Image (cartoon, rainbow, N blue to C red; front, side, top):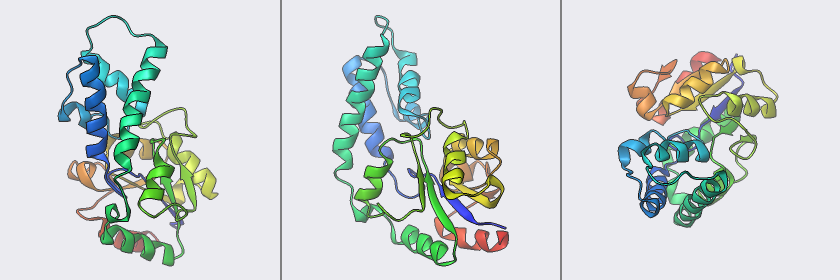
Length: 215
């Protein structure tokens, strides 16, 4: 019986893809590294440092120390945080809000499972600061997706086992993480188009119907 749903944040609850792209682009340009939207798409669901290492695949300059890599990641995050200040309740669509409210009203526990360390700030900006029963994000994990750690911790915080939780994802790496942790996964976006999940949705609002079949 389904008892809880664990949502990825970016691309599922809201979208910050463009902000990520602009911030990484600013950092890459400063370093003289080629960066485009195709590379940016590889970063979805990936931690900040792992994302930096993907970008540095095209770096041809002097070797970078660990300290310098940390500085570059901080440069990106500073630019990203500045852009996130533009977010507000308008970035939470009526469809997502209505669906979340319906799921909560049905008695399900709701959690976030995101690799982003900016998750609390984003939730605050879009008006969901205290909405979820548990929050697992980049601040409490050591391994990013496709490792299942972020979802396993979310289930732990909820006090539930993976088999009674449903993960909602939009990235292939997130689907892989969910399955690796023993979760069923419902997908939107690119992952749904690739038919990667146990349930593949064309719209977020289809979620309550999927849930009904699992309860």
